[in-house]
Length: 86
Image (tube, one colour):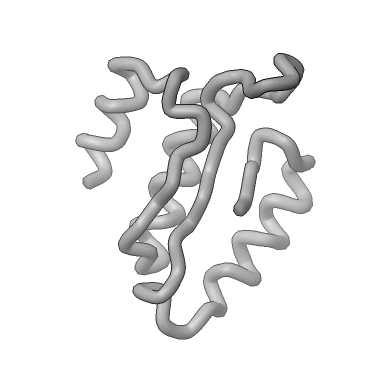
């Protein structure tokens, strides 16, 4: 799982590069988030800009499955981003 909202930007870039080198991406899913707080209540929420960046990364790098964590935070703006990129 890759929660870009919980990692510093430099580490996200490093992880993106590593994930881009994965061979058969149909065997993997990309997990992103979080878009709502979790059980602890202190998880950082990903901005819409970063959500779009991560969804674009998945599409542009051949990932066919994306898991979005904390779907309780899904709203119309998230859906618009998904529909625009899909």
